[in-house]
Image (cartoon, rainbow, N blue to C red):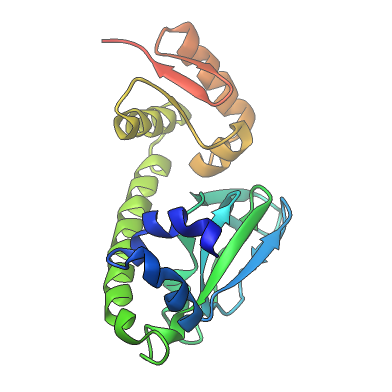
Length: 221
């Protein structure tokens, strides 16, 4: 686990934990690592979730998929990011989403019982980690509210403009890279890929944006 110290240091779950305390704490939380191939399902909708997952490498998508295979990407989890905590905090709760390795990924699992429902093993870290976890879940609620704003827009163009505007604001620049390819972006915004690609082309022709692959530049006053 020592090779992932930088990830642990950046993860808000471990805010306030000294570097020399990481390994003892992870042992107390019964941390275990697992690798996944690209496209592998990590959790299925309906699974009971008992562990928090932290992405060590690669990327993970949180998705909803209907009976006919139509996919909606709810979130992308990059290295250092977490998933599963919302369901894991509720006893016997079953996941309502699928979790898929968007790239070949390594995931570290932590037993949430060790610091949410008991203080055995986690010891002095229990209250600290619980407070950090609450802050993370609040931040994710803000993100989901933001996503609802995207998909509630009436047209594909309005969805794209809302998303790209927020990305420019987040990066602090009019040129930036997004984390999605075209199909993933369409799934994230809940639009048809062909219709979205056509709309992007029209926006470029009108001088609103420029793009190459996942690199976008917003233009205009």
